[in-house]
Image (cartoon, rainbow, N blue to C red):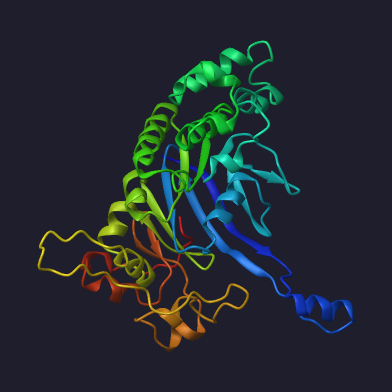
Length: 348
């Protein structure tokens, strides 16, 4: 499959970020150094047509910001995002409807004053995908596709359960007939009993509609279930990328290994204690990230070079890359066959 979605060297800064005291000092004419949060830093990715890319990492690592950049909700500070060779944004404005988003909380993302039928039809009517006279049938079709009764189109969001509201949000996104769907924690706010239904619906629709997806989640088991490839983020950077089975079976980056190791595991032996590893230390402030590799203050494999030099992204195997000075050592006890390549490349 050819490259379909291309994210090239994208960064996003938020700032300046001043404390209350600094704002007062600035108003009084003081010399205050402004600071900016680099939420996403020099990210390069490609996603192939029909592929689902999972995006994981700790809270605050930049997953949702990257999703909003890809969707054209936020403009990048630098870099480019191309869909089939065409920019998603031009001069800070989204210029395509081919990328749509399903957000985490459907009650927050749906207008409480609009009937759900109007919410779903508003975009398609505005962009000529249907007409006002045909909108009722158009919405009914998408309601049926997501498992909702079309007679509910005149209801308001508060009249639905959480799972039903998320189905409305999915229908709204799909009614725009997108090629790419950004799913930002789409089941995190739902009851566990409902999550499986929404995930099964997602898998069915992506297959039927041949959608390319970026699936953002902190749930590693969910990412493994729905994704073809997985990208691991830490403090705004992609530190590992590869086919989901390979990355889960033999992590090449110490952070990925620590992230997977922190997940509690089911123990069948009643006499055995439940144990899981924790990631030592605190996530550094994005206002002042550490020099060199951002992960080195918490990394058990760190050496002097890690504290001074940002690691380049290197090839591990076909379709797999990692940004770590010592990835061969990390892999040595897992899969020695994967430790031979060390060519510097972008995370493709």
